[in-house]
Image 1 (cartoon, rainbow, N blue to C red):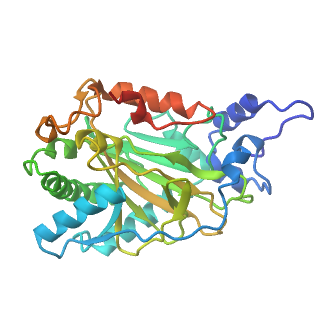
Image 2: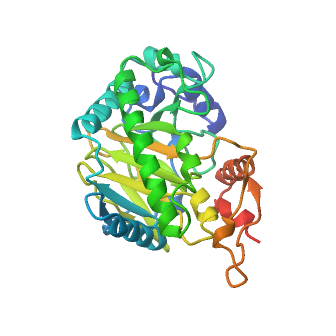
Image 3: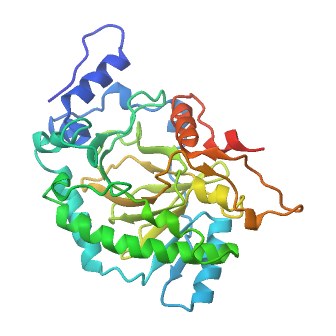
Length: 355
């Protein structure tokens, strides 16, 4: 289905609404035969100027085959200095990872009417198909489709998960729950608190599969806007075609995929809990100029209790190291994140909660 606007003044809101109402996603738009992207996907010049050849950043690689003390120290250092790190020898079989990537690809490459069954408000609330995330942001929509499965606080009924990727998602979630518990123990010990201090956050899991199809004009848009995650931790699985970047100062640096590895990002919640000992990482995804789709499977470990107060762990505070953040509720943080996405100059959400 091609979407067109009559000659005359461009109506961004109208075109974006037509696209959303069509429920075909970016993949469906591409399959309609377009050779240029709709105008509401085009990013402002200040963003486009940063889409240029860049250097590659060396991401720390933590092997879970090392001693616990070595793993804890390497995670602590990476979380302090980079906010992101790879983990290898993590115990999840390559077959599980490969099957998950193939299942995510299979879902997003179904006929559009099958994907549309999972649009918000259709079958249920635990498995939702989304496209470009937020069409209202003034910086332009993003060239991406997503499937989100909420495993908590109420696990999805098995038939709410699309059959084409159901088995693989259930298997992956089982492994990720165990891995999340291990990571939280290492993170806790890296902060110098009890190993079980952050265990409660492994009970909360959101799974997202992002599908980045070929973009005919990749230099005019993005796959994902720059952001930090609101989570404690995010664990990402990428296929080999990816344009993931992290920000260091004012520079964007490319992260090369590492086969068999999982990429761990520190989120805003952990930055607050650690009182800025560990720093969340600003990242984005460039639009995909390759014919092979880019696929990311992400597991997000947030706090599902939106009314719970979030503040630095008291064990980490002292007269010499007072709290950097006031206490706030997770729903406040989510509202701020939503509001700053609508700004022409998005800011870091945590800056609103500093004392």
